[in-house]
Length: 155
Length: 155
DNA sequence: TTTAAATTTTAGGATTGGCTAATATTTTTT
DNA sequence: AAAAAATATTAGCCAATCCTAAAATTTAAA
Image (tube, rainbow over all chains, first blue to last red; front, side):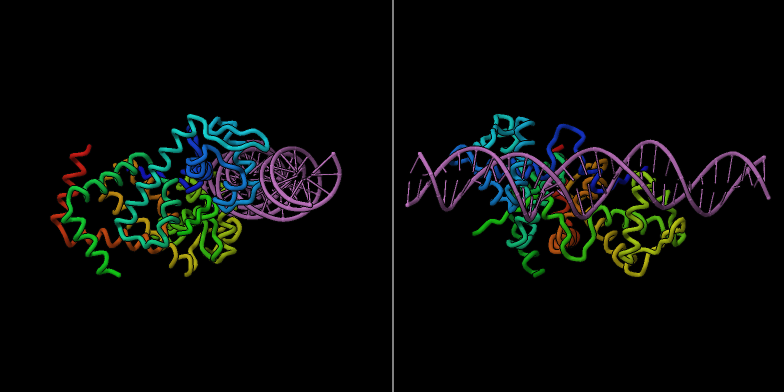
């Protein structure tokens, strides 16, 4: 048993072709904001993520180079087909974690933040385990009830 | 319902007096490595965390300034009383998350990495929820069994 | 006790993703 | 169509944390 530790930074580094945590946040948000109209404007995106426009510009340029989005100077932002596919998965992951945490009794006003933080760190395998747990409770209503009961008794 | 999103970087910023994710990793490791002898050498620490010695030097200097550890150039590293107290909590948190994830069926060979990533992101409240869940299973053995069963049926 | 080996530090560089201030472009208003 | 307002970009800076290469210090060996 050779325990092999690394620092957080190292674990979070993206050696594969996967996205950085912040990129995932941008992609998710672009997905959400462009559902209705098919596009987003840079300042909407910046506002939604609570960053300054120059930060969004920089990130959006990077994402365009990675072909996650279509973007030209001063234009509108739209998702590429890749971006759309990835975005969809990110949103799904987000919602799974949200539901998972909710089930465990995380307070409503912390839910979003906790989800936002956790979603970027977990592996596919872990996500699947979360999904399984949710399913387990769905097909075992009695357990779900007892758990809910237990949680509220702890408040 | 005013959903207020931020990017991962913003969530992970430490405005309070709390430590960065990497600092937490260093502190945890120093705690582990200094249990027996009461001190650690810089190169042991660097080795254990898979970083190069200069990286460890820099971090250790910063942590000494924050009075988490006692350190003087070329000397040994020992925990200050503050550092010891915080370290103890970090280890406890680590172990809680490890147990939590194990219960959910995360595979043995991913357990450490997943724990290492999640431990730096969650709030006190969320940790408490994890603890509650573990307790719930301890006092409801039948549920624990059914869950374990369910998980292995999913493999 | 001088030399060699091990350990640690310093110096300088890279990446990520924020920021502000100033500039450029586009859109809207008059 | 010219002026004003809104939007977006560029330039340059900051902090965290990693890295390599070279220099300094300490420890061990001959």
